[in-house]
Amino acid sequence: MLKVCSFLPAVTQMLYDMGLDDHLYGITFECPELALKEKEPVVRCVLEGKDLSSKEIDALFSASKHQGKDLYYVDQPLLESIAPDIIFTQDMCDVCQIDMACTSAAVAHLEKQPQLFSISPASLNDVFGNAVTIARALGKEEVAYTYLAGLHDRIDMVIDALRKAKALPKRVLLMEWLEPIFNCGHWIPHQIGYAGGIDMLSNPSGDSIVTPWEKILKYDPEILVIAPCGFTIDRTLEEMHLLTQKEGWRTLKAVKEGNVFIADYDMFTQSSASTLVDGIELLAGIFHPDILEVPERIRFKYRKIDIPKRALSLI
Image 1 (tube, rainbow, N blue to C red):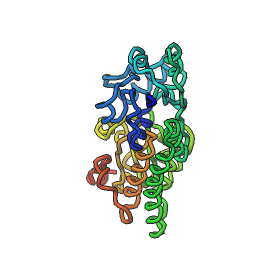
Image 2: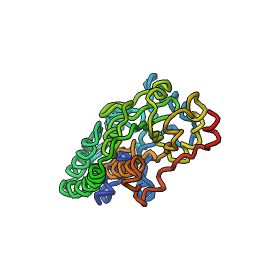
Image 3: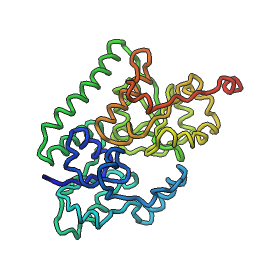
Image 4: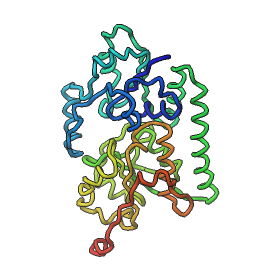
């Protein structure tokens, strides 16, 4: 049986989703909890165990990139003992995960050279295509088509409900980072579109970028979703003051109407097909609560931020 190492949490998630996890021998320190209980982390990061703010994390990554230093590294003895046939890595973002260059260097001296696959989606369709790539590499392509058919059925149910109700799209902003503020890019604008929204500050199929606060005030979103990359709800709550203390925060339409939400990152910035469909269903329930409900199984993965009416009355 082929041995696989997944250097991407999203790939690890899809291997589990498709029932192909018996091929999986090595993962990353950020992979889903179930995988961490069963598999060995091969990829580590110098930030593990450090309690840094959004601003400190951004500064550290920027400095490392400028200096040509790698924040991620491979447990070389463990990789050698696994002797994988296949390694899934990426070449899209050298900030969020280990990249192809670092992976290639790690395998250069292995006695058995594994086949490397770069899983680097730009769009939601790319993410779905990646599921096929992963399964095909293991000789199980049909498994991916069955998996994707179920996910497409779930998306179709959302689209059909919104079409039947003649729902108008909501003006949305989804933030991928807090300090500095990043808009959303790649597949997230597509998720927003399927859910019945439009994010006019986003960058579909492209990188997220720093977005000035003044631009956000002018855009004045109806709904604000905050889902920083790698952050859970509780982690994001620790830094909400970075937004709430900004001049003009309480004047935003989303704030005045009580439509500010925090969500776990894995439904948006982790590009596994199933979690992104979870994200679409979550967003649809947030955008159009009179038409669709957030599925009960993922209600714990978001929180509505209550803005005291007394504070708003002081504007």
